Image 1 (spheres, rainbow, N blue to C red):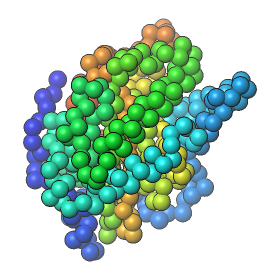
Image 2: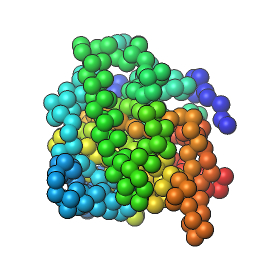
Image 3: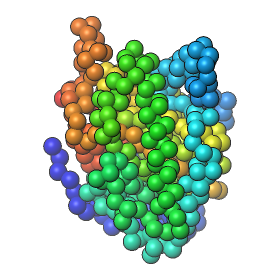
Image 4: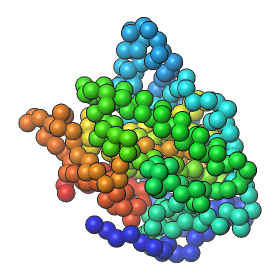
Length: 358
């Protein structure tokens, strides 16, 4: 397998600092090829949005209501790979507090943030690039990456200690999202025709992994030339995104179109990752998405990744493999797959698709 790299290939420049100094241009390192550039301020597809699903009825005694919610999630997984959820059980106050605490962090003095500068070895901490290819075209964003589970990887010393009470907020937020992700995993499993714990057990049962990347997209004077995050599918199991509910930016690929997601206030955006695509033998598919930036407003989002235990081989579940539908993917641990991804950076759907030929 590929070996981990200890240092970034070039000096790191914070995009937030660039944004404060750029007036009407951006450095060449951030200018995407014409085929990858977004169409900014396009009016097309304005009325199209990913499905919005109300989970409130899951606790209902009415089985028809429960079945309707399961069907909506099943349809969304098959047709979009993305959906938004409301009435999910996570406190709105906690969601707001988590988002605003992180916004405060990104607006702290640079020397305070630099204490948490990361390296490509683990990506933990304050970062400004994904992938270690020398000379790569970069994305217009900074981020903070941290582990939540397993407990052996959770290192509070690598979490910010400012603003005040931030570690307590992040801890409580992670606890609630692990619970919510577990509920959704049971639904995905049932919708695949499996017992409700099969998918979770394939992830490692009680020993699942979880981590969070907080994305900060500063204002950009030339948003039509760059992206906040290049097209990719998520390498993990399932992603729970708390978007900036004031500023849209996430785009989901639907056939040949890019659909800009209109975030619902106090909703989460859920998407299928590569590991569930593999376990489901492609019944569920991870979907390409990217982030656009704008010249008027910064944007911040919290991506919570619910992942398999890192050293368990992930391969199509035997219940979903038949002579007519043989296994499409070889076994590979999430650690191996994640390292493969990190060396290359965001590359559309080419990462998981390339596994078919291994």
